[in-house]
Length: 441
Image 1 (cartoon, helix red, strand yellow):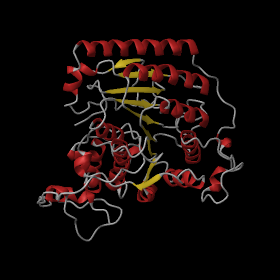
Image 2 (cartoon, rainbow, N blue to C red; image 1 turned 45 degrees about the horizontal axis):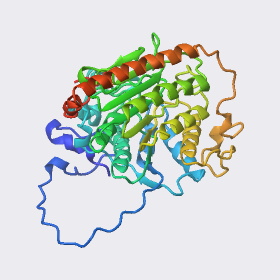
Image 3 (cartoon, rainbow, N blue to C red; image 1 turned 30 degrees about the vertical axis):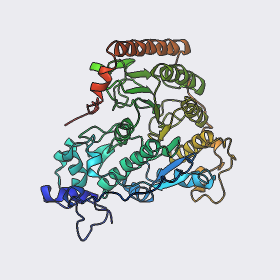
Image 4 (cartoon, helix red, strand yellow; image 1 turned 60 degrees about the vertical axis):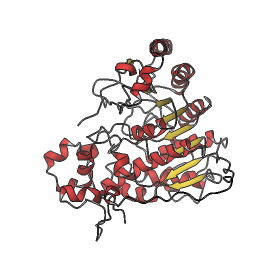
């Protein structure tokens, strides 16, 4: 039985709103006695390390169960994991169950008060729930804290695999929750696993490139650190969530110029999208020279996404974008994100993984043994995700490429400014926690 939320019980005087009540509280990490560490015995040469796996794949059967309480995408997790497995993509992978993130890990970004609200939401008034964003698209449900801890824990485990050199590719499709602030849920995101995973990567890698291709702006961007370059391709328009992400380079202080926003219009097709990824993200990677790459691969830009309904991309666009990110030759952390047709998201992410593993193209027919085969009707194929008439593309290719060049010029200026300071700005920023546009105390 999960008991991570019980660490709040002593100070709050409350029991957690878990999916199932536990008869007794397990001690919190900070309540355990300090261990006495004996000197290690003398040993011979260490054994040779095993060869890295091509893939570390993190999933959570428990999180898939808890997802039944979500306001949307209740079975997307299990549909994705089973489809990836049924196509045989995990045969050579190290498959791991996501551990729940500890309170200490979650507090690497989120406030303790907010985490307590996730654990004890059923004891809060509606007004207090609303203050923490626990309403509407982030409505609370039994097991919420555990769900958040598993979401963050999976992305942290994937990041840890890259830090340890266990693989060059680590995947956690249940991650990519890029809207949650320090003290408030937002946009179907209760925890910001993206920020937490990047913080973990920064403990082992000097520079992180974070590429976000979700149709909704990656508004939880690092603003103060030149060690993290954030690139977000998204839609930005009046009334379109989250209402941020205007064209330009953001950031503050030493991080000024290290958050690049490229808004793209309705009807976006594969070729202009991929040209923008190659021009902006590819050019930025060449200039920034990251040590590791994080790709938030939200797929709500698929044509006819039932919630976003803005772009007209096909699954092949996401597979090619991920391939471009991998071509930069750095370890790659691959996270999920938006995508509100579960079958389309599962098919797309399966195709992305196949592309990165050199196993594309996959057989078009969904495997007959797949438990959710009926959800892919009436054709029961991967390619049938996009079959209807598409709206016109409102993007001007030359204008998009000009915007990419403008953003790259701002990045080059930021890098030149950092170089003039002899890297001291990066050293100072490394001591700070990230500042987020949606951060709230």
